[in-house]
Amino acid sequence: MVLFPQLQNLSMNMARKIKKTKELKKHILIALEDTKSSKFYIQTLLKDKSIVPHIVFAKHIGTDPKSVLSAIGKFEKENPKIKYDKAWLVIDKDSFSKDNFKGTIETARQKDICVAYSNECYELWLLLHFKNVTAYKTRDEIRKELNIEFQNNFGFKYDKSEKHVYGMLIDRQEDAIKRAQKLIENLLKLNEKLDPYNDNPSTKMHLLVECLNNLYE
Image (tube, rainbow, N blue to C red; front, side):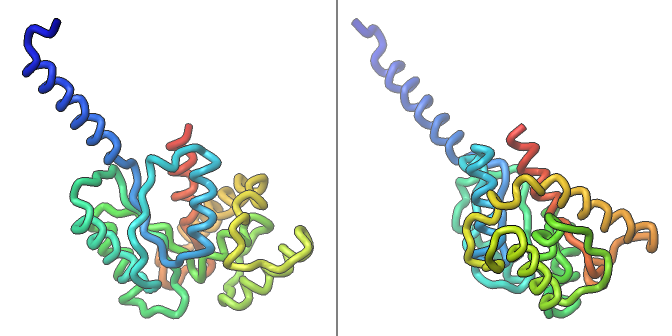
């Protein structure tokens, strides 16, 4: 016999509300510059680490850096109930203007948003899984070298639509992180601070990967 059914119903409603709130709580919001290569890599990493429920992606609205940053604001307006601890942008320099690329990075930092940028392109991060990259390289040169590495190691050329790149490269990830760190360290030895727009080659993809790995650990 329930003596106070009203209190019991209130308690159950509160429990459901708390559960709902927890389900809407995310650790990280990620906005990507593309819908294939980097997204496939990150999505597979999340599955591998069993942290999919803790990550949410902003809806893709454009490939240029400013659009990627705008996707964060758009997500917040459209999903006010979804809370997260940290936001990340994944952007490439490509052929975007200094204002678009470096300006976006500076704006993001002012908003306490982390930026995993790559100069020249995201494929630099993948190429670092195979070897050191220290000299200036164009996007075409990076992709050409990546094609050679994929052909030599897997028997086929790199394809942005390949969904299993993370699994193919996971045994090399630690080396890629060290090489990316070394790139940043060397740039800081040459200059007082980093200049993302002119620092070619450079990438901070490893910081996002480490962040996700640490979330798992």
